[in-house]
Structure formats: structure tokens, C-alpha cells
Image (cartoon, rainbow, N blue to C red; front, top):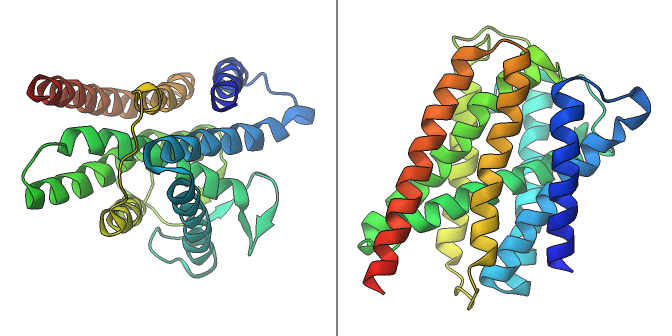
Length: 256
């Protein structure tokens, strides 16, 4: 079943690359955005289940969804952490003026950044591993946001910022908020410290792939919107993360 869900996500992703990038999505198909976000979050949830067991994977995924919705609600209602912004698009059912799908989006982001941080920090001394995992996870999440937010604001207008900023008119508080929020979720995981299951390596590969796929999707939309600086910056950062990821992976395999 997990493989079929992943295949469905890939199929929906390929459709989305063309429909959203070239603005071919008809009004009657707007619900497809919500389905995509939910499917993406479910894929990340399955990753956690396969990596750390059913109970831990489900509980951690539900925690990320619930906590991120609450934090986003505080952001919209009280300008907490991220800055002043408002959603302009309908992303489906809402809780406290915040779309539930945003929780699934955060689950996806934490899943992707978790896999990158897991490998990059592996086999390091305990304290260095702790700090490396925390910082890598948070910075990988911010890397995604460096392309996600300019596209969502400047190209698609999924939400509107009410205050100026240095980077495509997005306030610095947004990126600081992303770093803090992502670091919090990764810190919870480190404190929880669940046992790793005997995974065959399939889901780590899938999650590492999804990290690049999400960046590529927003780079495509950024290209049609002329956000060339964001494309260059995020492409370089993503290439750097992948180089570090595969270098550490090869190093760890050589030690085993």
C-alpha cells in the first residue's frame, strides 16, 4: 500500500509540474492543490513509519501536523513568529482560520529535512551529531522556503505579506520563523530519540528524492515568474546539500 501511495504522489506531482507551472489548472480543479499537499504529507508520514515504526511514525506525524497548524494560526491571527500575512487561496478545510493542508505541507518539509539531516549527521560524536542534525534539518527547511515563499507570494499569490522585506518583499522574520519552527520539530525528535527500524533503504531514497522534487517544482514556477535570483540561490544550496548528503552516505557505508 505504501508503494502505491508513493506512486500516486509521483503521478500527481508530474501533473502538477505542468498544470501549476504553466498556469493550466482550471478553476474547477483547484482542489487538486489540497490533494497534492495531503498526499505529500502522507508520503512523509509513511517515511517516518518505515524508519521508526508504526506507533512512533504516526504519533510524530500527527504532532507535526497539529503543532504546525497551531503555529500558523498564531502567525495569521497574532503575527507570531513569521510576520504579518494572510492566505488568499482556498487550501481546503480550515481550523482556526488555518488550512489543515498546511499541516501536511509542514510534515512533508520536516520529512525531507529529517532525511537530509539524518545522513549528514550520522556516525558523528554524540554532541556534534546532535547539533549537526538540528542545524542541518532547520537549514534544509529554510532552503525550501527560500524558493517556496517567493513563488507563493510573487507568482501565485497564495498568501500576501503585509510588511516589507529584503528578499522579494518577504520579511526576515518569516525565514527566522521557519528556522525556529523546523528546529523545534527536529529537537522534539532528538529528545524523543526513537529506535531506527530495519529499513531496506527504499524510503530514505524516496524522501531524499522528494526533497529535490519539491525544490524543482518551485524552481519551475519561479522561472515562469522571472525569479531568477531565487532560482540561482536555491539551486546552489540544494546542490550543496545533496553533495554533502551523498558524501556522508558514502562515508558511513564505507565504515560499516
